[in-house]
Structures are given as C-alpha cells and as structure tokens.
Amino acid sequence: MKKYSKLIIAAIIALIFIGTFVFLYQKSQPKEVVYSEFTPEVKDVQKTTIITGKIEPRNEVNVKPQVSGIITDIYKEAGDVITAGEVIAKVKVVPDMGQMSSAESRVRLADINLKQAQTEYDREKELHDQKMVSDEEFDKYAQTLRQAKEEVAAAQDALQVVKEGVSKSNANASSTLIRSTITGTILDIPVKVGNSVILSNTFNDGTTIATVANMNDLIFRGNIDETEVGSLVTGMPMKITIGALQDLKFDALLEYISPKAVENNGANQFELKAAVASLGNNKLRSGYSANAEIVLQSVKNVITVPESAIEFNGDSAFVHIVETNGQQKQYVRTSVTTGLSDGVSIEIKQGLTADQKVRGPQIIADIND
Image 1 (tube, one colour):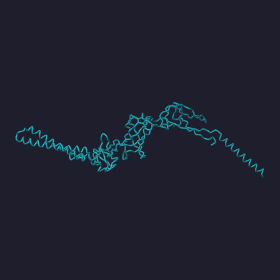
Image 2 (image 1 turned 135 degrees about the vertical axis):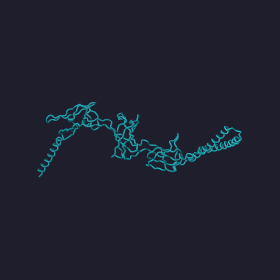
Image 3 (image 1 turned 30 degrees about the vertical axis):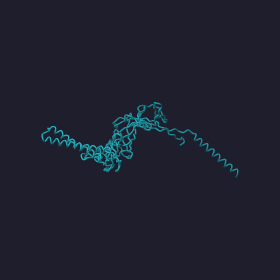
Image 4 (image 1 turned 180 degrees about the vertical axis):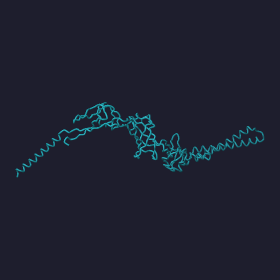
C-alpha cells in the first residue's frame, strides 16, 4: 500500500509540474496585434466652443427716492408688471433741521418785505390818487408789491416741501411718491415699510426702492478665453441653453465683444454679450445660468477620419492606409494634410480618398483566444 501511495503522490506532483509548464508556455507566446479600421466619411466639420454665463435684462434700472425719509406704503411687489410713471411706494419726509430753519427764516423775511412793500404801495397809491405821483412811478411800487407776494408764496412752498416733501403747487409731481422710470417687470423690492431711505447725492448712491427691467429684451452675458476670441465677430449666431430649462434652446446673435481682457482664475478672458431672440411663450428669469454654443469655424462636405487614426510627428501628420495583396493585409504609412477638427473627427485635405481605409488604434487580442 505504501508503494502505491508513493506512486500516486509522484503522479500528482508530475501533473502539477506539467500543468504549470504548459500554462507558462502559453503565457509566453506572442500576442496578436489587431487594429481597428475606418472608412473615411464625407461630412461637415464644425469647431465649436461653449461659453458659460447668465441671462440678464438689457435694461435694468434701480429706482431711487428723490427725498430722504421713511417708507410708509408699498403698492407693488416683485413680479408685477409696471408702466413708466406708476407709483411703487410712498415716503414720509423726515425734515432736515438745518434746511427747515433756513426755510422758516426765508418765510419770515418774505413776510417782512411784503409788509414793507404793502405800506409803500398804500402811501404811493394815495399820492397817485391825488395826482401827485406819475403813473410810471406808481407802477414801480405796484410791481414791487407783486414780487413781495410771489416771494411769500415761494417761501411757504419751500417750507412745506422741507416739512412734507410736497407743496400745494406741485402736488401732482410729489417727490414723496416713488414712481417707476421705465415700463417693465419689478424684479426686486429690497425695502419694507418703516425702512429709512436716503436720496442719491455726491457722497451716496442712495437707497434702491425697486429694481425694474424689460424682460422681453434679454441678453446673454459671458466670458471667452483669449485663445478663441480672435475667431469671433459681431453678428455671429449662437445657441443658448438654460441650465434650469435643459429641453429648450434659444437663438441669439453676438452683438458685443469687450476690447479689454479681464483676468479670471489666472486666464485672460473677454466679456461678450448676445441678444436672445425668439422667446415665444417661454418666460425666462433674470440671473438664469446659461451656456452658449458658438461655431468658431466650419467646413462642408470634406473627407474626415477619426482623430485617433492620425499619427502626428512634429508638424507632420500620417495615416496608415489598409492595402490587401491576396490574403496578405498590410498598412502603408502615408503623409496627409489635415484641416479642421471638432475634437472627434478631423478634416483630411490631401493624401487620402474617400474609398480608402485607414488603420485605427490597436486592439490587443490573445492569439490563443
């Protein structure tokens, strides 16, 4: 039994050894190199670029108050359509003590001058009635009296404006009523009733009561890299895709390219604007993120091959043309002149015809498979 056991163990060891040898032998055999092959295709090639940006109204206006004060009423809300001159809010004036003091002083002085003018007029009238003063001389005093009365009215109006922001004579053009300066849609009303507001002046931009824009006239604003801006001219068509509306595309026309670059993340970029057209019934919102696709270059009906089939060597380009001699297949390295590429296909200007096949990238396959 021991003899047979030794023979069985020896046989197992021999089988393991032979199997290992066969496995290593098969692994050491050369692998067949197989190449993919392509037939040139005649088609259009376009070089495009994608520009990121956002949708904005062309005309967006910040409505500011003409007087400083406190918001007492707000008659509109964001999203409302408004016409030019329509009231958005009302401001209660908080009088400036210095201005009010000056206005009150002006009223008092005007009253004094009026009393003096009235006294002189009455005296001259009595003399005029007695034929002791000429008509010409009397008219001067009458004119002075009229001017004094007008000054009193003006001083009282000025005082009322300082106190209340409006006077009886200009009630229809009250500066306490904040009116829209354009027709459009209210995008935002950043103030609330009770907020203090200030008018725009040399030292302050003033408080924005509302932002109004014409949402039927929109533009795309974005930045393009300096390496591509040289291919752009105003009037070029663009396709706009809205991030929130992936199923919709809008046509646009490039209308502005900035003459000056701005640095963005270490790269020089140029701002551009395009007018968005054909909105139809689609309602776009200000600030939508968007991508614009623009064709930088294009060629039509040219011979193309996949760019992966091109072998580049310095400034030269080559393809391997498939030739069959009987059962023998060979690849002939041929110089070609390339043209425009869209990143997938590349134009072949010279060195290849549409009925020839070219070798593509390698496909490694085991010869024993």
